[in-house]
Length: 310
Image 1: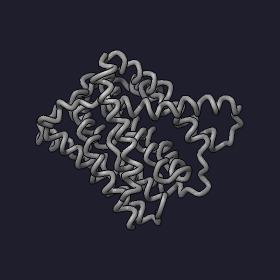
Image 2 (image 1 turned 90 degrees about the horizontal axis):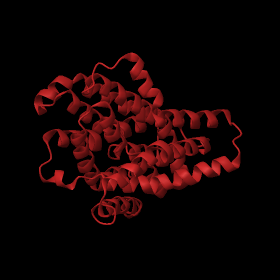
Image 3 (image 1 turned 180 degrees about the horizontal axis):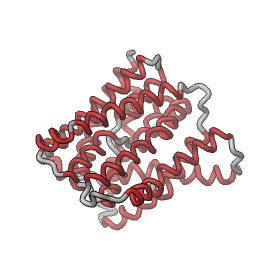
């Protein structure tokens, strides 16, 4: 447990620093919007390309890790989709609010996942995490765009505009580029890889700071029932499904540990940007992100410590 806390505490300290900076040194919202856009469109895509392109997958159970993560996403997403009407009736949610529950229950915070994976398991952990990046990010972003296009305030988006939203998503094409470079062993000039690596490394710190700055602590006074429901799905059900599938498939040690990390992190702050762009309920998603991020400081150590005993 001490090793788990040693890996998690620095990550959450950076998030806390972001919250403090937002309320002290950098109170202007425009500052954080600029950092968010820089991270979203430049720094984080560079991290994805370099992490996936340079990952040594020789010792990673790629198919099993991919199946565990995508299987958990598929089963949970199917459950939320089939139960959309009961969920909306139970929590009095209009379509845009349902999209926030969907995103909050499925997406993963890659900043936290990468930081914790590297701290817990070093290069091997980052290699396993790179597999998660390559398979989960395109799927999750595509699903989120489709759900927002159908149930957001701008519902009824044409197939052409829907395809354009997917193609323009920087996370999807950066994952595709990194996977292509890795699979084909394309010769990329070292100077370009170093350039991308510098950009990518900066994205982790800035991304965690932006997560902290985006916390809406005022929402903690009375979180909505839909928020608690989403937290249970994301922080308990999803990791339980992913770890169970991985264990049944024979994953152990670092492979299973990083599957647990990827499944148990809170939802992605980038979903908030997407919700604002496509007519989702951004305030509800901000509340979900805030509560999940704080709860994850407790739930992630429990999930990781449990997996370490398997």
